[in-house]
Amino acid sequence: MEPVPIPKSTALLWGRVPDAPRRGPKPTLTIHDIARAAVDIADQRGWEAVSMKAIAQSVGLTAMSLYRYVDSKDDIIDILVDEAYGAADPQLGTTGTWREQITEWARTAAGTLRRRPWLTEIPMSRPPTGPNVMSWTEAGVRAFDTTGLSGPQKMNALLLVDGFVRQHIRQSAQMGLLQGGTTTDASPGPGYEATVASLIDPDRFPALTSAMRSMVDDDGDFDREQFDFGLTIILDGLAGMIESD
Image (cartoon, rainbow, N blue to C red; front, side, top):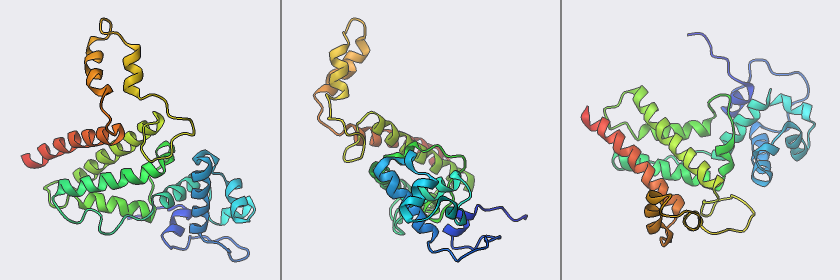
């Protein structure tokens, strides 16, 4: 098998020395220092504020000095995402049925994204392959080890669950519905259901009016209730495929 070219930043995250180190003084920082600085900026000002210049100012280097660690903005995104996720707990999803394990994985991943919903907004040009992200992937794939799924099916099942988790948190954040997450500085307004109920009439929107009637008086946590509902539907589908084999 031909060697796979690995971005310098990814090699550094894994503790590997890049194939062609640059000449000059020995670096005074590590790739993890750069990654932590990037996360601090994203936490304070949003991921869009993360740039070579902003990171350099944060760590006391020139922007050109950062090229010892990264080659492009894509590399910055890679290390930002890997650091923001952090390593998965080695005990995550190690007990219970496959369904209990992947449910724990999904809820834990959602908790990480609720704390940093900006992670769901980042457009990525390539899949993240840092060691922290890979630890989450390992835990998720491991959840299906007791099933009869093939390797590709395990990866596809995890991608399905992960995609749901990310999209749910992204949508909840954009609608200002996250509980305990960083969403907006604006004062909370009336709930979605109450707002919709005040706008529609039963003659024009009979189905929606009927559905909303029972929701307006519900004081539940919309974010988590919808999360559990969606996850249950997905796992029911996976269970049908797994149990049919």
